[in-house]
Length: 126
Image (tube, rainbow, N blue to C red; front, side, top):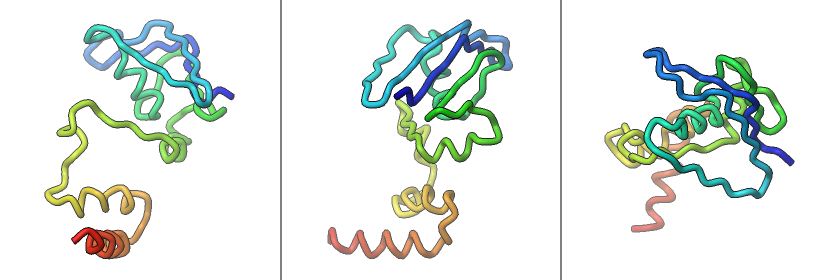
């Protein structure tokens, strides 16, 4: 089963940089994929598309059988995880508790509930 597919995808950044020019790619369930290449080759752009953070100007991106567009992107993102190479790009809260709580709160949990659960679980490690 295909979990991700790009077909004839093009993407140009606002500064005019053409990052993707007719890229096609398929990733199947249980398949491991490795992307490598020089800076500016389009690796990060492909990953941002596979995380439904940016959208092609031409071509199609499908995740889990659904074509990705701004209307369904937030639902699809719930099934995808993206880790950046530089942790400074991901960590932005002043404490570990707030950092770990952020994901739960952004998914609709009331603010107190995840923090209470995390405080209880962290006591087990004392």
